[in-house]
Length: 193
Image 1 (cartoon, helix red, strand yellow):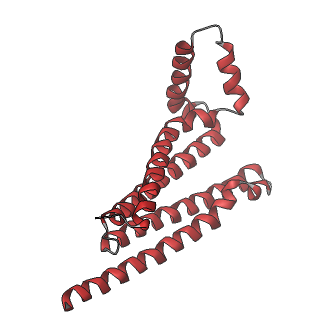
Image 2 (cartoon, rainbow, N blue to C red):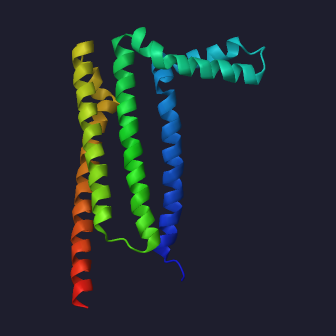
Image 3 (spheres, rainbow, N blue to C red):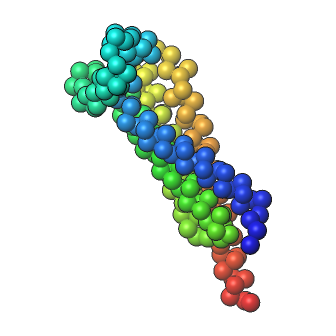
């Protein structure tokens, strides 16, 4: 049977979502090390310091840095690094769940069975994760206001995450309700035929 244009598009989208999911998991490993850095220049300078060594040795040293950062960020990083690391890890896990739910929805589209209760549940899980990211961003923004005693945290990506992920969560809830309603109508039609 020939794939529809929607199924072809879903196949491409599933590939992109899968690549993003894998990159997200790799980035989660790097979060503590990146939150310890004050700037990208520190990482470049650290790599250049060992420039006379082989690329394998430099890579091993950089991997050692990122592995040791998992412990050091909590012990020596200070409150800013600990809050940043916690926030990024929490949001990264929530983003991984959202991407996984998207893959599951795309799987049903590829199978030609779009309107299912399973898709409604997947969208509801994605909505909960969006709301959690929004709440975490709000919490980090409030923490920043108290920590810095300034209005500058209102001009950061954290403040922007609050309405963006709140709206994304609401959109996912609407999509969940639509999938559920369509699945109910499909079940009724299947029973009448």
